Length: 260
Ligand SMILES: NC(=O)c1ccc[n+]([C@@H]2O[C@H](COP(=O)([O-])OP(=O)(O)OC[C@H]3O[C@@H](n4cnc5c(N)ncnc54)[C@H](OP(=O)(O)O)[C@@H]3O)[C@@H](O)[C@H]2O)c1
Image: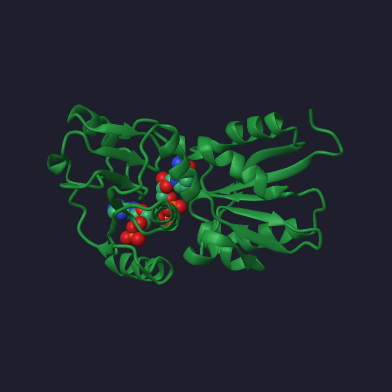
């Protein structure tokens, strides 16, 4: 029931038809007894600044949840960034403070690792290949290193972004083994697609599927479609697959907590 007390959280996306967060987020608010409602808003990039600035003035906006392609642009509009958001320079949630200032946070990574743990795939001590170096991949990389992986290899279409991310991570996790490499999945325990590949029909696969070892855990950040071509083909090769939806299922609790 929406009343005059209800606080509003827009989900900023462009386009927004693929989003899956609102029903999970709204159910989590109900579970926690928080009178907050999320509605997805399709905001074109050239209207993003005005949209975000207008929310500063609205007293019952609790914050904003941010998805593709706005995570970097919204981070730049925040007054401050915390935790992984500060490291990767992108945010997937913004809290509107009482004075209208905006605090950005990033929980993609924590949600991803919580999803792995919840499904029995503890990444501690495992060799991980992460494909991608964008907003989601940066958060995932940060959280995987925080969870104590044995090694993290980052492969990205634009290698300079992988190098930059690896450098920032190494500055924080000084003893960790962080490398930039090719998207060759052989000899890894966990292979993660942290790119947008798989969202659209005809997308290339993020890794060379023929070089996937049976038994490898193959995990997605893409959650629409529910089973990406990567997951379908990996499963056919005898791999253990882990869907992108598990990342947001575990993350919604963290997002609601951040807005309190
Ligand atoms: N499950 C969840 O909870 C969750 C949470 C957040 C995001 N996601 C999903 O994660 C995906 C990525 O989102 P994002 O926010 O990280 O986007 P982003 O910041 O724009 O990063 C996109 C990444 O994908 C790569 N990429 C895009 N098109 C490619 C192509 N044709 N070939 C090779 N690489 C390509 C980019 O490589 P370059 O650096 O070379 O451009 C970059 O590494 C989206 O599908 C999003 O929906 C899921």
